[in-house]
Length: 110
Image (tube, rainbow, N blue to C red; front, side, top):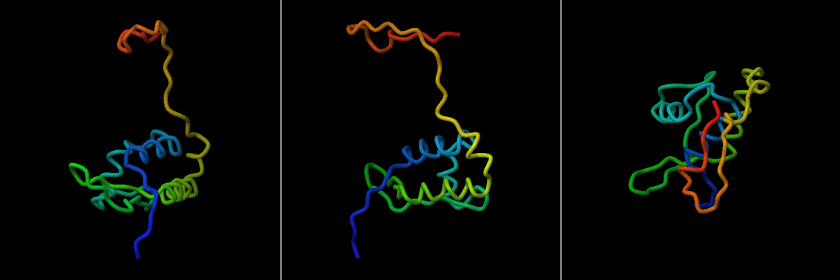
């Protein structure tokens, strides 16, 4: 039976894992190793739901399965739920002139 499903790319999964579980692992490497059955996290693996053919075959993931994976990891290690944080933010001095190219707009504050 063919169904229509909304799937997300590996990049979006990496972002969700980073937000949900923090910088526990290099998530791109973790997903690639799960696809090859080389790793797990607390005995859990996150596998693609299907593939998308572009120039190369790209794994696509079911958002519900990603959420289930994050909740299962939280159940195995409750401290991760409390310690996760959003992406790192850095302070910048920004010139907001509209004609300025993006390469010249910000300078990091050290």
